[in-house]
Amino acid sequence: MSRSPVWHPFTQHAIEPAMPSVVRTEGAWLETNDGRHILDAISSWWVVTHGHRHSRIMEAIRNATEMLDQVIFAGLTHQPAEQLASALIEIVPAGLDWVFYSDSGSTSVEVALKMALGYYRNIGAPRSRIVVMEHSYHGDTIGTMSVGARGVFNAAYEPLLFEVDTIPFPAAGREQETLDRFEAFSRDRRAAALIVEPLVLGAGGMLMYPAWVLTELKKITEASGTLLIADEVMTGWGRTGTMFACEQASISPDILCTSKGLTGGTIPLAATLATDAIFQAHYSEDRQKTFFHSSSYTANPIACAAALANVEIWRDEPVAERIAALSAGQAVGLRRFRNNANFTDCRATGTIAALDLRAGSAGYLAEIGPKLRAFFLERGLLVRPLGNVLYVLPPYCITGEELDRLYDAIEEAGERFG
Ligand code: PLP
Image (tube, rainbow, N blue to C red; front, side):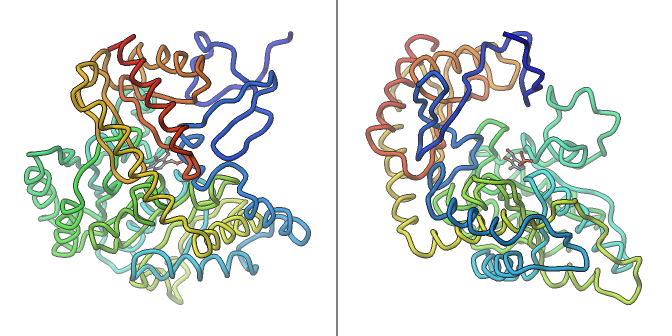
């Protein structure tokens, strides 16, 4: 067989075993070309919410293609984008009145950073710093790597990254330190924005912190005029138990980034939502104050139609009940690990559960990661540990039996590798 020319993401091809080829997806399952069935316990990198190929979203995509393909979004508009924007504004925390479209989580964050700096420049009080949280991940573009944790993911690109101010992760008992450090950074009014992953830091190791910390951080942003950017790319669309994680802190950020679950995990789309104050700072007869950002596929009509169908599913189907059931199932699944010596910690926020295996360490380079991945794949389970951090982040349609199967395998992995 000839060698494939495909260069895969986050993949060391020199050691990667042969990759299964997926020919079909359905619900929580992937089917390969050799007839194997694999349970997608990570929602295909956290994008699939209701389940693969939800019929309503697939139908919306089919219908949209009867009328539209890509349409330039500068100087023209279209109904799917207009309708979706109106629908999103109803769903997100109050005060986010403007919707800017892009294509991925990373671009939604790039847009947010540019909006924050543009805001301060346009109101005539430039600010140049961004405050970030330790262990964060916001994407792999230069801007998003700059505001993410430094390490193996971005070491080679360090010369291109900009400097940021970092507050500690608010681990249990260290919350006040986080707040004090942020207050200190805010004092000189140089910080344009604080960017956070609300409640759960994903790629940084599924680290979780309580909602009250976010509430307190928001108070400090208000006192200092620093904008709060909530990167809800992973946490949005029910992952943490509520539609958006910010709701649990009873806050509205100044800017909110969403992608992944926006189309239910079917096709790429992202949106950055902003307050009217941020929009007004860019609204001027002075064309230099224009928000200078675009990508060719901005607001793709087919993707917008898929997202609209997703919003309708939330409106018409018992999604909240499914999320509550999955969250309860995760809590039950974790219960059996409380006194399991092979694991040093287990935790959950809403539908996201994570366990730290005693052996190995966190991080991409930890040898245990690929071994665990192979172990689960042999058992027909798609689990992609972050080093020794095992996490379960499945589509909301997963059944109790399927969850049990996952936790049985995790227990076995503990015995084998812990
Ligand atoms: N922000 C967060 C919190 C994420 O988890 C991710 C991806 O995992 C991103 C941004 C980047 O999203 P994308 O991979 O769609 O560019």
